[in-house]
Amino acid sequence: MQESFQRLTDAVDMLQKSLRSLSYDHGGQNAQKLFRLFDIRRMEKLTLKEFTASVRKGGKIKLQQMNVGEVNELFRVIDTNDDGFVVCDEFASFVWRASPDTL
Image (cartoon, rainbow, N blue to C red; front, side, top):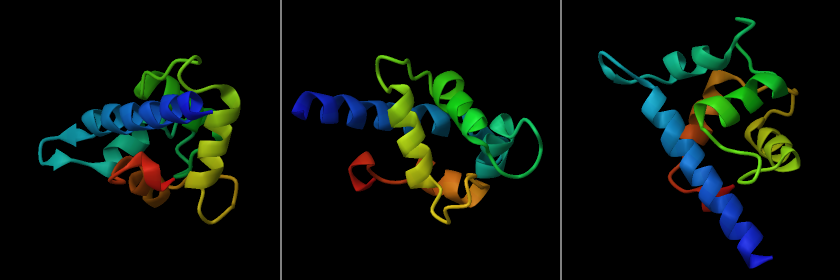
């Protein structure tokens, strides 16, 4: 149980760091730029499929580090207004959260 928790905590930390590194533009870190990388449909909200792409491709998190169920649960946690989508503010709050322990 403790190993599983540590694995997931490590994966969330790695995900946040990887996504932050993708957010840089001319003026520093840019949450909207980062969000647009994964908002494929340009609807200003991420579906579970788009969020999963941000985890796997953007965050470089492998299935062994965070399984499908864990990605789905993370999506539900980040979706604070429970509308079934992750908007830019929710995504940014997660990416720049100080510690994955607070999830």
